[in-house]
Structures are given as C-alpha cells and as structure tokens.
Length: 427
Image 1 (cartoon, one colour):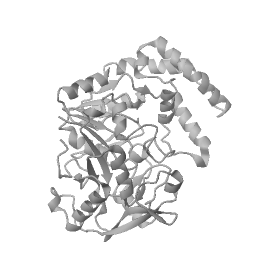
Image 2: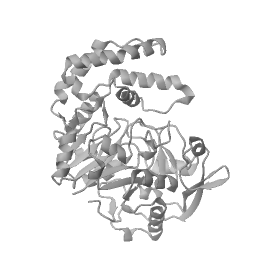
Image 3: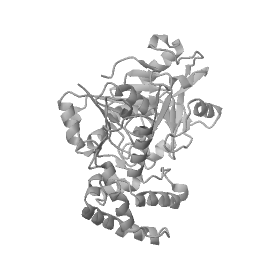
Image 4: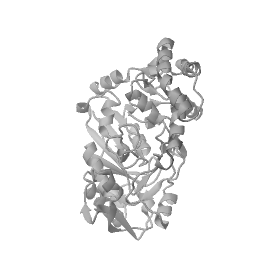
C-alpha cells in the first residue's frame, strides 16, 4: 500500500485541505510534517465548512488517524482551541497523535515575531506574526522547547532560561520592550502538560510501523513549493520545507517508503504576503478572480494577490518535488472568461526564459509571456467526469498538464467534498 505526499505546487492556498480530505476516507494516517498555525486549510463537508490551521485535514475523516509530526511547530494554546472547536461541532479528535519532538511556539516567540517585523518597516517579509520563524530559528540554534520538555519541569526551566538570556537583551535594548519573566513562561507551558499528554507519542515509530504493516499514510504539507525556505522565493518564504523532502525530515519516514508525490495546483495563481509574483494582476480580472474564488487567507484573513496560471512555476514544482501527479483545483472560478491567459515563459532582460531563474534579481524582473486559451461559459460544478466538462475546459486542463510536466489526475470543480472529477486514482 502506498505512502503519499500531498503538497502545494505554487505559493500555498491551492486547496490542499480539500484534496487531503478527499483522500482521508481511504487512508489510515494523515500527517502534517512542517509549518505551524500559519497554514490554513478550508474543508467543506456537506453544508459544513471547517477552517483548519494546525490540525491535519484527516481529522475530519472518522477512520483516519491525524498526526502532527516532529517537523511542525506547535502553539499549544492554538492546538487546544482548535481541538475544542471541533469537539463542540461533534468531531471526534481523540485519535490525534502529537510528536514529542515537535517544537513549541511560546509567548516570547510571537512577541519577537511581531516586533521584529515592525522593525523591518518597508523590508518586512510579510509573516503572519504567529511566532513560526523565531521558533524554527531557536530549533536550529538548539535553544528550542520541544513538546516533551513540558513533562519535566527541571529541563523546561533550564531551556527557557537559556533562551531568554539572549532574547530579553534583544527585547529591552533593541526593541525597547520589557523583559519576559522565566517563571511566567514556565508556568504557562507546564499548564499544557496534562491537556496534551494523551496525544503525545513517538510518531516516527508509529508511522514506520504503519507503513510496514501495509497501512496507507498521507503526508500533508502546509504552504507551498515557492514558500520553501530552500527552494522558494527567498527571503519571502516560510521557515520550513513544504517540499517533498520535508515530508521525510518532518516525520522520520525515509524516502524509499514514499510511493507517490501529488502537487496541488490552482487553475490560476495566488499569493499572500510580500515577494515577487510575475503573473500578478492589478486590474478588474484580478479583482474578479479574488471575488469569485473567495481569495482570502484562512489563517491570516488577508486578501490574496491573484494572477493567471504560471506554467514555469508548475514545471519547477514538478522538478524539485519529483511530482507524480497534479490535483487541479478551482477550475470553476475561471468560468465566464472568453479567453484565459497562461504564462508559458518569462522575458528577462529581453530574453525568453522557460525555467525558473535561480537568481533572485532575475525573478524579481521577470515579465510573463502569455499564451491565450479559449474560455467557457457553461457551469461545470455538476460535472462528474472529464468528458462532461465543456470542450474548452478540457483543452485548458490538457494544456496545463502538458506545460506542467506531470499528469492531472483530479480536478476540483467546486468547493464541496463531492465536487471533484477523479481521472486517475491516487491510491
């Protein structure tokens, strides 16, 4: 049985939650392997809409075990609040597993995130202010707090003291903020121990055993390929690896156990936060995409920047992730355009470039080269097979597939769980 990675092939917000949830009824485990509550998924089940920020989308599938892996950074207050909200709506969250090696977002991480972003002024990255970056920085600097630390007060206090020795100097002397008391942080974190203890385990052992036993494990990335700290539009990126390689380091499952890598592509392109975006629209078409597509961040609440489909980015995602399939979402949003532009290459310094430039400067100056494809006006939300799509919609999908370098195996034609055309099974 397969182990699959499902990830965003653009800048995030492609509809990973819908794709994960679609597969959730057929898989045994769904694993978040990176990011934190800066990534949001919207899942529509019947007439119910769920906004998930930290929890794996599989938590909405009764037969599925949701797992938060070691590569995730966890704000315990957010996690408990999200669990409580789902419980109140009748969702069983008791099967959740949380890695003891996942790092915790503390109050000082969110404080530093917000004040440092304000300090940057015009050079700001556009973070969510939720402490994600500072938590990953502490992890790499080996002064982080892990979930397992809240079960040993002595170790927890030592680690908090070590972290705050330097941070309080920065807060007081650079940002003119009051120092944070060690006792306050320790007391707050210890208060989560009993509430989280029932979820914490060695998730690496659980997942490897599950795969060895023939169970189906789905690894769910947050954000998207172009926000990867190594392979994205640095420095306008997240602080972790949403790409396929991150699934291995963020879960403790080796690459030889992964059978399939599925990239989620929106039928156009969106982005939240600062950074280059070659196909971004500043006209009525951009406003129309934003309105029809409901393009507002699930977690941030910010309007998304909108633009036409970028095949250069899609090819890049195929390459760096080793994608085997695409799930194309929000095709229905494009209904009503007579012609739909698709970016097939860039112009940089008067030259045509068909692959993503490695140079940050070149990418900032890239101008899209468009190919016009005929649009359609028919409602496609009721289509159940590819053949039921209008001919021009079929041609659009086939053109994107050819340009992107991997087969499109599923198409989203509406927000609902059942509004999906499955061309090839992922399992």
